[in-house]
Image (cartoon, rainbow, N blue to C red; front, side, top):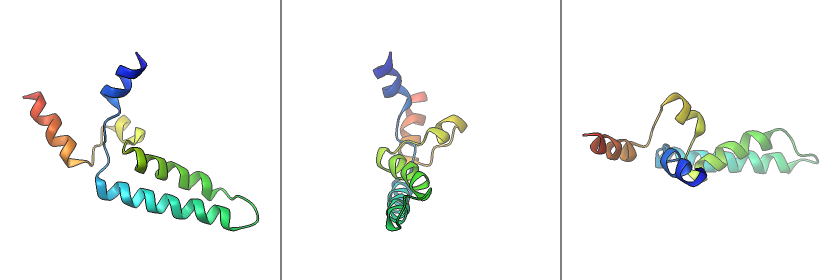
Length: 81
């Protein structure tokens, strides 16, 4: 069940430009978190966008039915016809 669920539900739902913004922004926050003497909470706020940008899948987008990746959206629309 696990592999089929992941394959059918975890498709790329983030636009490529948004993915790069998430990767760069997340990496900057992670680096800022480690720049001081102690690890700050910025680490948590940086890891989430960094990982979703690398993977290309946002679980929150999936839950609310949002898909900013227009190429995937066109592909899905063609398959429904």
